[in-house]
Image 1 (cartoon, rainbow, N blue to C red):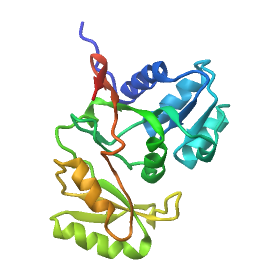
Image 2 (image 1 turned 90 degrees about the vertical axis):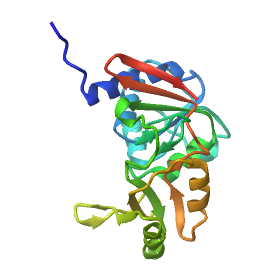
Image 3 (image 1 turned 90 degrees about the horizontal axis):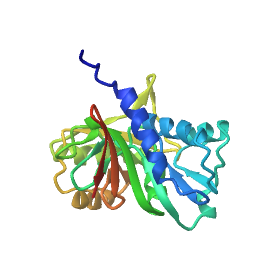
Length: 228
C-alpha cells in the first residue's frame, strides 16, 4: 500500500523540529520570519529548551514568541549569537539565498550578520540550481522606487511594487518593497554587491554575504542536511 507524500506544510513542520538540535541552551538565538519559522517558534516554545533570549527579525515573530512565553531581547543587548535560524524563498548549491517573501529582509540580514552560523530551514521546493525564479524582494526608500524599477528594466527584468489588499506595503522600517521578476542570478555575491550600491536601495533580498552554512531541507524521504 503506497503512502501519501507529505504536504508542504508537513515538510515545514519536519524541518522546524529538526532545527531544535541546533539551538544552544543558555545562549542567545536569532530567529527569522515566515511560515516555516512560525513552525520553529511553536516547536521551540514546547521543547523545554531554555535560552537566554531570542533576537527577532520582525514584529510578527516578536509577537508570536512573546505570546508563547519565549523571551525576546533587543539586538543592541547582544554582541554575538551562535545561531540564526530562518527560512528562504530560494537556496542555491553554495548556500546563497533569496529572502524577503515575508517583507522582513532588512532586519533578517542585520540579525544574521551577528550570528556565527545561519541555519536555513526550507522545504525541497526552495532548493534551486540558480537563484531568480522567485521574484527578488528589494526594500527601497519610497522616492527611489521609479528609478530602481528603471534600472531593473534595463537589465531585462520587471520590478513590481508590492501591495497588500490594494494598499502599498510598508515594511517594519517604513519603506517600500519591489518584487523583481525575470532575473537569473548566477553570481549572487557580485549581484548583491552591485544592487546594494544603487541609491535608494535599503536592502536587496540576495543573501550571499550572510549565506547559510547549513540547510535543513524537507523532502518526501525526510529531512536532508546540506552543509555549505
